[in-house]
Image 1 (spheres, rainbow, N blue to C red):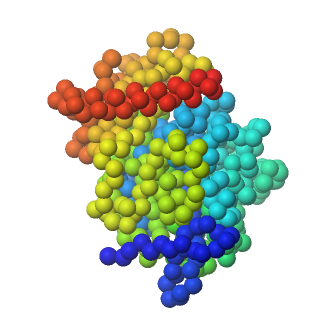
Image 2: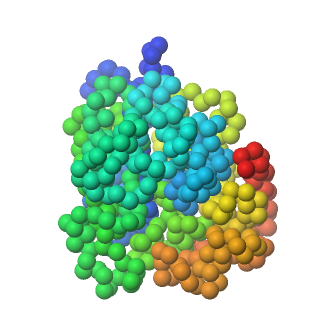
Image 3: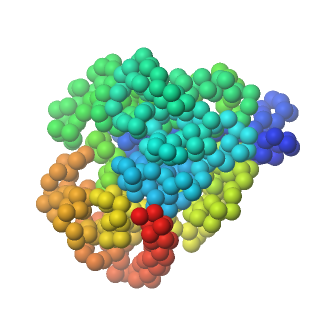
Length: 483
């Protein structure tokens, strides 16, 4: 078995990880690229079982990477970004929604880009930020040396967009996803002789679903025989095909620059499936915006040529583990203020060894949030929440009693009246739990979460419920201070 070879570079300038590159004794620091794809679910990859989509480069990543199969993110985009960047649940960074002001990550939060920057890395963001741009909330204040994003964090403008290049508006020609990848590859070229951290965050395949026809045309023939019915959107699949093509270019670019052996490439999605869930969601209940497994499950590929043995990892983990893992691999110093709130754990042991174990008692919380106004946080404690522990998932979906709460009224309409189901025609994806009760599921034995095991496992329910109550007490401190 190959071993993960990491050695400290002795340098007054770089406090980061060094690796011995193949066929040379010269040590180089570990570069890191994170590619996060917007609204492309776990089931939207051919290698994961999708019968329609063609994703040759994602499939190649599947074969060549460590792939986590029990990996979860937040139920929607801005919360996932906050948790990934900070190593703690998004609520502890004041991010509870995708709209302002509830998507603005508080200024006290320290990002992984901050850590890389202080370690001497060149840092960059290309694409969707979605954590605030006004005042000091912009990415240019959060550890990124170079930034290319959209003014106002807006989602549209796929063709010939106006982008913010290092805070200056600039008109670009072409398709936005192509532009982001191209600019990211130029950044990599410019910094190939120094350590870099590149955060590449697409706007595709999030709606509006717009893409050049050459990518969508191959999927037109599936309109009439798709399980999605009137929800089937060839442009959605075309956007994924475009991202896949650009991923292939990125991997080839790293190889051409001989950076593949000292660059860790991490790829994941930002929330559960959207327009593809009725076609294939690997047998999971739920979708984006729900707390069921299909609303939080993510593909998670980690590729570091010659240093990681490809293959499946079944250990429970998630986006909050990325920061502590990178800090471990790259010897990044985590300030005490972040250590106090850090909820993630380093995944280095299981990256090195598929049979390694993590802390048995560790749990992770997910919550949809999305209450209508910031001050309404307290009444949504159980509105749409879950706790994960190994293969166990404890779920509670109990909408608040406020009839004017837009989020909870929508949850009730979908769960009880089976209307306005958004990304699906299957109302089972929006089902509610029993009123006032936590429900327990074994996600490996029962991926669709049909068999509630709570009655037979009271000790497990109690342990997970107590963890949630203690976690919410931390959330209360942040929410009271913020709102």
